[in-house]
Image (cartoon, rainbow, N blue to C red; front, side):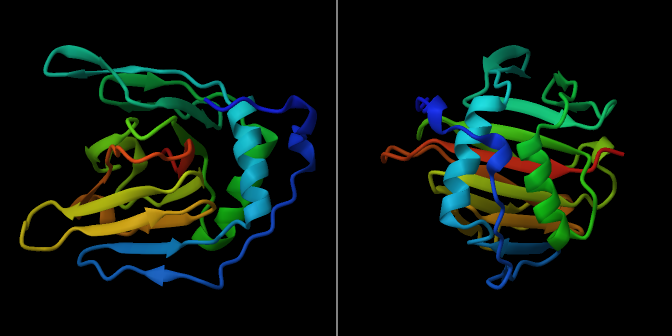
Length: 215
């Protein structure tokens, strides 16, 4: 993990400048996915990454697969309103209190999503061997048609989506750029899975935040 210059760390002085002028509506059946590749500007991306790296209580959980425990290939954290517990892959996460930085990011993307998020899952991909397997964000506590606001800071990583029921439908591939916002909503989680694959090429650390609404 990169070392943070504590002298330059000023989380309460971060100024959010966002742009929603460039948006891509992905052409996917049974889905509603919008991609803003430059939602946050470069200066704010650097500040955000440093603030999140320093103030988030990162941890490495283990998931249960076929009766065996495996360390997740990434660091995680769960923040949100009191009582908004999240469960996945045998992991139970109790929310930590919102930080000022998280609240600023949340407020910025809520202007686009037109919903009020009450929780966020953070993932820190330290290098190219950290990854996320194929899955859908379809846990019962997320509701019928969940709205997922995914924000990326740091190194650019490939992001793949595949249709669950028909292999003839081509996969969709995106580069989740520094400062990007990916908004997944409507029936997307019912019909599509997504995935962050490993890579052998050198990549900078990446922090991803997926804002959610726990029912």
